[in-house]
Image 1: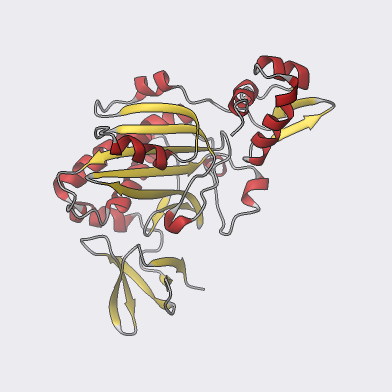
Image 2: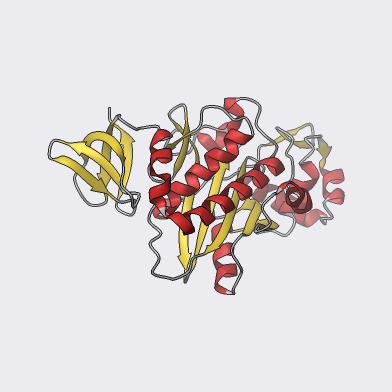
Amino acid sequence: MHPGTFAIFRVLADGEPRDAAELGVAAGLPADAFDAACAELAALGAPLEQRAGRIRLAEPVELLEESRIGRLVGDSRVRLEVVPICESTNSLALDRARTGAPSGTTIASEIQTSGRGRRGNRWAAPPGGSIALSMIWRYPAASMPLSGLSLVAGLACLDALDGLGVPGAGLKWPNDLVAKGRKLGGILVEVAGTAAVVGVGINLRLPSAVTAGLAQPVIDLAALGRPPGRNALAASLADALARALAAFEALGFAAFREAWAARHALQGERVRVLPAGGAPVEGRAVGVAEDGALLVETARGVERFVSAEVSVRAAA
């Protein structure tokens, strides 16, 4: 990562056009570093526009402010850190967890260079176009069953969006936020000892150049109406996650089972389950078990599927 990449992004965040010389000075970059930093920012998906020697972002960006988010967070267990650039907020949170960071430690980043999704998939997060944050939560024993945790985190994300007036969002088993049949966000749960790291990525405003290269249809909050501010969304997500992860510790997934099914976009619908290395299975999604497994009614009866094994699609 070029050290000037975030500096340029920060200067351009207001959406105002600047000529190259002015931008380089404002970002504190020598002339020989400017082009490389701009090229890297564009390669990360930032919607740069260049006309007549002037450069701007296609849309202004509300930069994340640690102190501002902290004032908006109501849960005292949340300990928030905003970093300008990292490979992945989950990777950084896992490092913090391994060195003893407490429950509620939350990492948010302006720019992720190697964001990850489930099953090793890349998570596209153009600078300023999404929210990416990860929260650590410590559970009493390494053997505590964490199945269903990603589903609980999904409900927490919907609580945050509901509270900000975002309409039409739902869940798709096991870890997707969806709207209008397209992916709005995702959740990644990883474990380090007794700590779970819950990563959340939500699309705010994705440039068409980014969405065109993705393997599945996506949507952003801008397509659902006026999106909330990034700081307000980060604070709302942190609050909702802290409440949900603490409740999961006390109650397990069973307490969330009915609420999750009520927000499942494919509940009662025909689905196609794609087991890793196995033949596809079709049936009707009839709910989730008390451990978070997907229940599908097939010709053979009700079958269970766990998230490590499968992907799920609406049946054609």
